[in-house]
Length: 188
Image 1: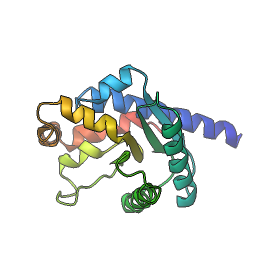
Image 2: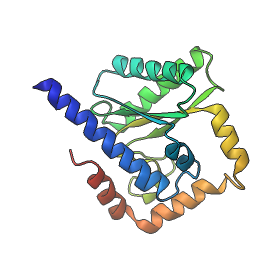
Image 3: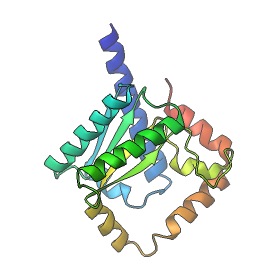
Image 4: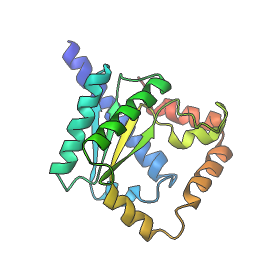
């Protein structure tokens, strides 16, 4: 019975994350580069039910290894269905993942982006809607190929304005709008 429940959980989390990518990241154009890879089927969704940091780091290492061995995957969203619900624990995990990336000599080949339901920028108040630019239904580590990031940046007229535009949009929508949106993507 637990296995069935876990499988249903993982499917629901993947569906909610996929909808978040489509509706929020692509739909609101928070990342102008995401649509191309998504439409091409080059975005991998990897969802884990593990909760222990060591197991989560092993999942991270496994997904990074998959990226190295499967060039048809442009990027991976590693989603933690049950792990790291506390934002500051998530930041610790993200730091460990980054350190592992560096220890393996893969910095410059891959980079990480971070999303969490309680994301909080250091220079923002907790109730500032700007935080929603990096909020997701579940904790996510986004693994990106550095080469793809460089190509995307080179093809965009002004990447420096993307965060400014996103913050402006987030504040225009307001915190309640964002909270409702994320809650609807996370029915569990």
